[in-house]
Image (cartoon, rainbow, N blue to C red; front, side):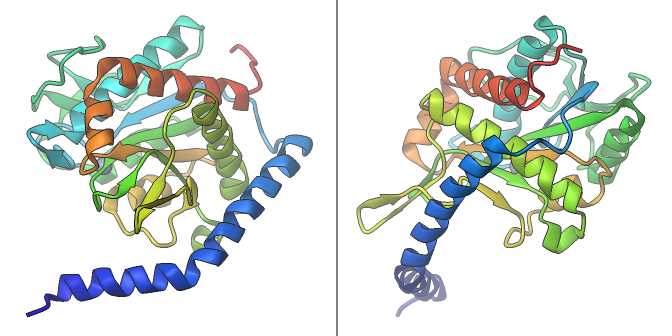
Length: 282
Ligand SMILES: [Zn+2]
């Protein structure tokens, strides 16, 4: 008896085969776009605040794999990123705070529920629920500070998918050209930084081949709550969501468990952010 899941996987495989030439063309055209962007003027580069948002936390662990929790990976990457940016003199607000590990990077990932949201007045709101809308409200409360937003997540999807993908809000969905223009440029800058630092970007394995497709992408085909809330319910012009890797992929799993690799990810995000904001120290 063939399960529905198998039929779906097979159908996806067939569709992928048919669509693959188009996808490869898209990859080429992305590269072309990249060189165009390097020459064009940025829409906006002066930001006074970086809002760093570690996905999930508290009772919401996010994806889990072999007792490794997504929220702890996200938190550790963001704490490391926060440290780099703060040391360089940038102003940072971190949306989630862990009352046990505080702002200390962890060698070994924990499994705690001690995270809470932190609002503009620095009140600590324990994450006893998912509190997605409260998170968006906190982010919006900083809109007078000229902020940009980086939300950090970790994926759990088919085993053959690996590497980092960077999401930006699509103009088609939100009808906001400046959102897409700014956010996509930031996504491309971070993609370049990952490439330069040899951190794996999104790749889909198929029939023993690796296809590096859609490393940066809009969220037209993604209906995960977090992406929708972060993009739809926040009014910031520049916002991206980074999926650091796929917990179900064995290479990504080992990589994300390794503190040195999490530091590399944080370093690369920081480098991309700083390049995007044109090294203008705030
Ligand atoms: Zn997530």
